[in-house]
Each structure stands twice: as C-alpha cells, then as structure tokens.
Image 1 (cartoon, rainbow, N blue to C red):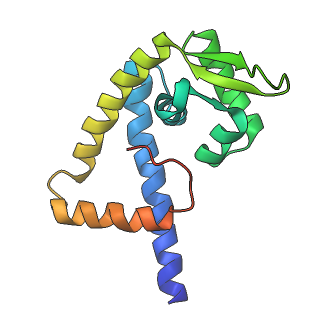
Image 2: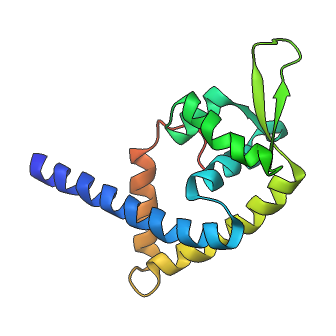
Length: 148
C-alpha cells in the first residue's frame, strides 16, 4: 500500500502543477490574475460581508499569513481588495473584496468553470468526475470552506 500511496501523491502533485499552469496562463492573460489570486478572491467572495482576516485566508489557502500579505498588496493597489479594521479590536484587520474585485472574480470564475470542463472533456464520464470530486473531498475534508 505504501508504494501505491506514494504513486497517488506523486500523481496528485503532478496533476496540481499541470492544472495550475493551464489555469494561470488564461487567468493571467485574460483577467490579470494568478490562480492563487483567484482562489483568494473566491474565498472572499463567499465570506460573510466579503471579508476575512489574513489568518483565516491563510488557513483556507494553506499558506502563511505573511504570504497572504504579499498576495494582497498588489491586488489592493489595483483596487480589487481593501482593508478594514475591526471595530472592537484594533489589532485585527480584514481583507475585503471591493466592487471592482467582485466584477473581476466573477469573470475569472467563469473562465475557471469553462477551463474545468475542458480538463475532463472527452476523457472522463460524469460519474467518474463525481467520484473524483468525492474522493478529493474526503482528502481535503479538514480544510475550511469549500469553494463550490
């Protein structure tokens, strides 16, 4: 089982790299976003009040809070994200999705959905795609906030 588990992990990592490359190319050329930028903004899009703390974003993206800071700065300069202080705790700040960001991520989500269909086109049945989604869901069940 160890050999099979290792093979499964290696193939998942290879698939992740391939998908990131495919998605990032079009997201960058059409929307000016990386895949990680898009995922960050999609988490904000689904969050209550369109905002999350950097720590919560870091947990959802499986990165450090400092990485979230580096990711958000360029998007803030472009007007897609903003900052909002907590009214009760001055130490806590939220990353917010602006109206401009909502429009951009809405269009980027459509691109992601279209590209997702292309990934499986002519290779997988609907049942196989559903089974894969279920299996990967079990693998990532401990992660907060599914982006569907």
